[in-house]
Length: 167
Image (cartoon, rainbow, N blue to C red; front, side):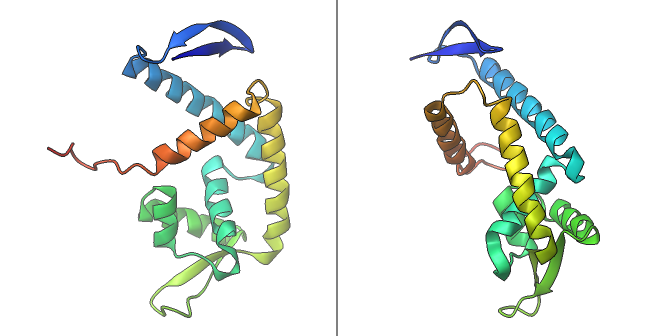
């Protein structure tokens, strides 16, 4: 299977995916991650948040008015509980998130997006979506982008060993 390699919208050559090395694939993934991270941070700068903070806010927003426990949020985002607790504390201090009582379990609290911040979330989503579509995603065919998202979702659901490979 061959794919086209692009550089600034121009086709450079075709790569045989059967012979791509792990370091070539890794370098491509790392380059894309850095570019996407940088662009997201530039677009989000006027809102005073980072890409990771937006991922937290958006995931909490998806939970709706019922909220989400910090431990469940950490699992959803694939990060540590301590990192997420610190991030939620910061976002709460800035008036973006708030903790509410958990009527199902009095030992825990739930995180929700503050009602007055919800319109800003709509603005952030539109600004980020438009910014990404007009720049980094502008040369990608929508059907190819759909495949890209589908593959990333599948890979995100793969269980990875924490210490060593199983024998």
